[in-house]
Image (cartoon, rainbow, N blue to C red; front, side, top):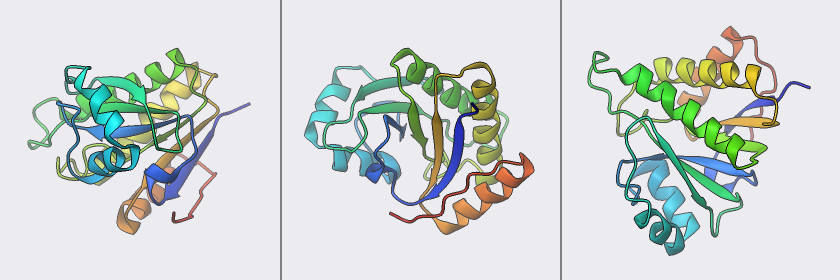
Amino acid sequence: MKPKRELYLGDITSLPVDAIVNAANTSLLGGGGVDGAIHRAAGKELLEECRRLNGCKTGEAKITNAYKLKAKFVIHAVGPVWRGGNNNEENLLANCYKNSLHIAVENGIKTIAFPSISTGVYHFPIEKASLIAIREVLSFLEKEASIEKVLFVCFSRSDYDIYRKNFAEFELPNLHTDRA
């Protein structure tokens, strides 16, 4: 059976999945956007656990408990800051998705939700980022059957529309348009 791939418009912190991915910074100590929202929703215990992880390099990922979130785990992936596209940004972003999925498999995670990594304050162009995200997830799922469902979560309608267009390019069904 093929894993379900869904596009979701809403708040990633409200989803009852095994893991949500945090678009984290290298300190893992919270920040703006989805990172700040996840830290606020999870509670101070998440920050305390993140302090013990001693940060994370760009393109890599680490896992924590999810505390007050509906998810069981948070996978913190550090995306690249966009610097014009000539500083390995695309490869680093691809690694965020690959490394997050490897961690998911290692921890028995069956359902996982990804935000649009690096497209907020890190200014990675959403069109490029969404294609990288979809391509990397599909490539991984072709080789790994243990993950049952992947959600691509967009907070804004404009990001959602770009992902929806790119889903169509990959001929992906399973669109879900709820707003949490």
